[in-house]
Image 1: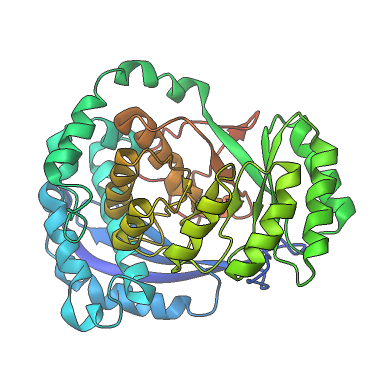
Image 2: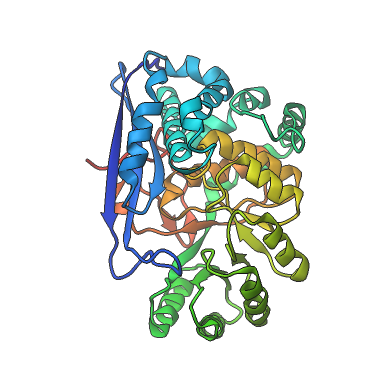
Length: 411
């Protein structure tokens, strides 16, 4: 293990144009992805690199927040800092002038995510191991020390979290086989919103040929008949060889969702993602109640542990898509995964080009928390910009082996 004292912080605004209309959905019509990057400079000639995700415009504001909010880390040795990161996370997220601008959401919480993710990346690099290896080797007590349980102890206490982690020790060795077999991927790039029917069909056939068993279609058209037709088209193409999911990206009101999901269910989608406003817990609860056979997936825009707690308590989510670049980073992701495990809700992170981190987190969830081996989203549009990009073969994520969280960019 190496020691590494943080001697400076650099915030980087990295923006990348997408090609051929990739990345567009019912709400987001631009074709630019971006990262607010936190780079922790150290005296050990290694950097900790953390990311949060954005869509170009406004990334500079996240970077300004990263620069301001990370100042208290300068002078800290990373291994010492991570011993009780739960307290560090509290200090970061409850810095009161910035908390006022949240709390725990928006630009300031995206900055916390990038800073937190940089800390975990640096920690793994000092130990010379990939992030998944660092996390699965931690003892239950060490994992709990990374977390901030404030505001969620009515659902999950520290002792309950320890109980879940200790219970998951049984069978852990057997679940390690996923490191060799690879983790299942699903293909989101089949059906971007502006793709023609012909392109959706061609993409679906190509995905099937590559071994994908799950593909996704973007919906949320002003004319619901378009969504219903395209979903039927996709089901016709894939038949029984694969499952398909639909993603509305929050476009529908509750009343629209009730009408359209009823029609979409004729094609038996595996899940319906973000059917309405992500803050409206009760609307999602209504959808779960009306369509018990339909998995309601959400989490891409759910900002923090408290809102996730509300969703889980209300029984308003079928698949938890928590994103470590949206909530307060890896620490809050783990806490939300633990809450989800207690409530028996599977976790399939919103990944896309945030999958650089999430390929590590799904392995931790399965091996250390005994979450079911489900699948993770695969969107490869930015992989060429990373030093150690995600690798997928035969629709399986190949386990990363380089130290850290796989977030180093090619300079």
